[in-house]
Amino acid sequence: MSSPQHPVCVTLVGAGPGDPELLTLKAAKAIGEASVILVDDLVHPDTLKLAKPGARIVPVGKRGGCQSTPQAFIEKLMVQEALAGENVVRLKGGDPLLFGRAGEEMAYLQSQGISVKVVNGVTAGLVAANSLGLSLTHRYFSHGTVFVTGHSPSSQKEIPAVDWEMLGRTAHSCRLTLVIYMGVNTALDLQNALIKSMPPDTPFAAVQNASLANQQSVTGPLHALHALIQSAAISSPAIIVVGDVLQGLADLCKESPFGQALQAVALPSA
Ligand code: SAH
Image 1 (cartoon, protein in one colour):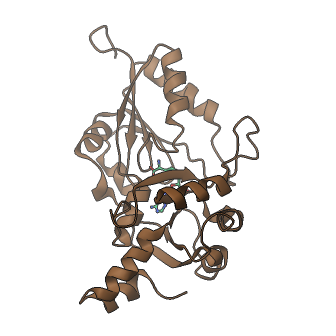
Image 2 (cartoon, rainbow, N blue to C red; image 1 turned 60 degrees about the vertical axis):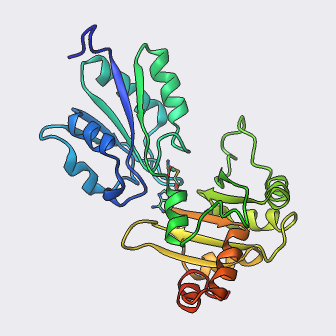
């Protein structure tokens, strides 16, 4: 039970992109101490082996387009369990603070007088880049990285849509790498908008299930983004990386003694 020494608190914990070995020690400790764990559906089931016997595991998945748990239900459940004295962990894929609705959840919990702790996780975009052998900020090709959602907010009229043409222009002129989450279903729209403001042969890579045994990827020029994603049967969850860091990888590969082999893995010709 909570007491004045132990204020009512919920811990938002990042489970990483899939591979349970990418959990932080802090995340493992928080999971092991929890009595109630609300789990997103991208969290690997093995992660829950760290839960103590008797802990209540509540799946609250919310994949786009599928049957989903309403956000309001999740928030109310966290409050109810925390006020009942449970040690509540909200386990989210990747890092909880990136595209995880953590902002809304923290605001709601705090409005109910509940304090919030966050344990960072390894975000999928970084793991996808690693799987491609890529530094997102290789200084020869990129000044920085933009984490951006490809999810179309058409059902949420109060949230403005991403201006992809503008973003593409900025990314190209400022040498930024785009790391797009939730973009495979809108790949055609992204492609059509981005090629208006970026060179159509700017390289992209799409990585599905980064860090897992069934990881797969495809690369090619931006103008063929949609067709290549379709033909490689890449689906959610996937990350799309767009930028000259991928071309840089190809160029470096050509000059490297390991070039042929690396290029075959990372950049098959489109
Ligand atoms: N908070 C998470 C992102 C949640 S949004 C994070 O930091 O990673 C969900 C999106 O993340 C998916 O649609 C996909 O774009 C991406 N994603 C999550 N896990 C992934 C994985 N293993 N491989 C590729 N993309 C992944």
